[in-house]
Length: 183
Length: 130
Image (cartoon, rainbow over all chains, first blue to last red; front, side, top):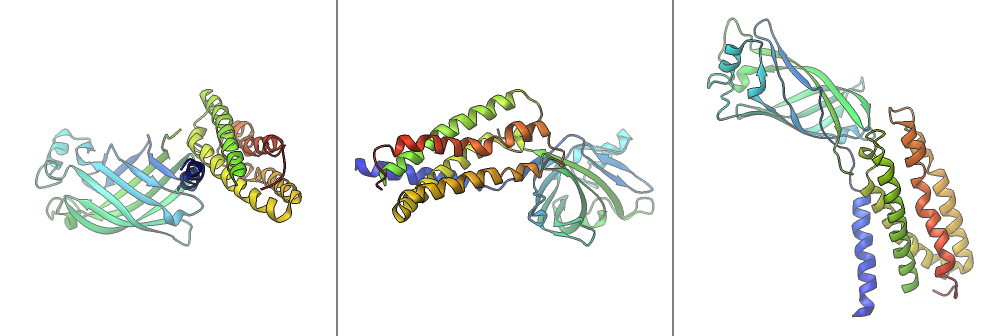
């Protein structure tokens, strides 16, 4: 039995250390300086908070994953009354659906070298597949993803069809991510 | 077999301790957030895995090539550890602090090989039998 201890310790340590040594790198979290704005003739505004995890490696960008959450109560239209109205049942129904979520399913690179992030966008409990473009900049300690895309609010039952509020909202985002602290 | 395993474990323990302390005190200077790029746990796990794998390879080459096996393996290890500094050097123009590359990322490539070489005479002082 005593003779078996050394090989057990040796190979146990070998397996454990090898799996740690080759564990995937590139775990990031959303950093300060993020912004997500929605633009139309009326209304325009932004969400002031985004959180979540991103895995990204410049060596294999198409293996990237994004799992993001935006609390709807961080909406800021520049008008307090409008902010409150946005949280009501007719619009985001914050009490039942407190977060907008995005979870990527695949990432491809387009001819310009930008990422095309396909995933499920969930607003008000309704999930739709969206492809979000992203320009990437930065280095391995901090990357920034930027892009513009359009969301049809009617698809998610956010408000009703209206002559004053357009169906499609332009979304402009900037998402800096920094390495998770794991000294 | 036992001798090689003990050699691997001792090298793993000492190089992990030396490398871990070296990086710990370097990061304590808080020059930047380099530890996010090269966390201590990863360096330690690479040292342990390399030491243990190398000791198994050493056992094999010692049996196959006798004392030439040790020489070939140690020469290869030295060459690979020197060549491997090309990897951190490629990061110089990628917004990573050059002090971190020069003082931490490059030296950690040599800690484990130096300890490996330094301890070999002690481990194999009595004989070269496997």
